[in-house]
Image 1 (tube, rainbow, N blue to C red):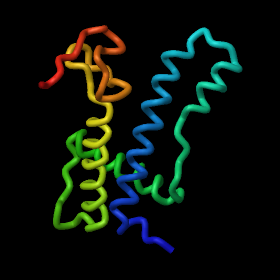
Image 2: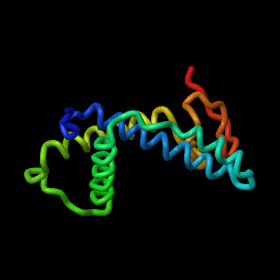
Image 3: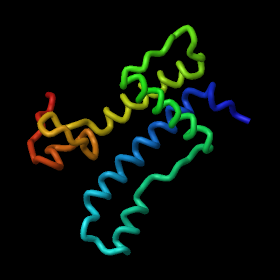
Length: 132
């Protein structure tokens, strides 16, 4: 049996899957207004499936909760935080960075893009400058 708490790579993968699922769900929600039930069902089939054991996702949600508390100003004593949570928070930061790299935000309106190769924003149509 795999020890989820000590598998930082697996936790990172679970977090990235959660981010991707949420990203696709949000896009479907925006695009599905006015669609019939059959079309909505087809759109929902685009949501990526989870590939890991449920324990990874449960721990990932715990880490997201810890991150949210930290952002709200709840202080954590580093000497009292278990090492597995600290490693998990590092994995969370890596997963967020990887997701942000794959789906950058528009500098104009802030909407996440489908991929980093987009020529213009999908929301506000501003054209992106390319590095040469």
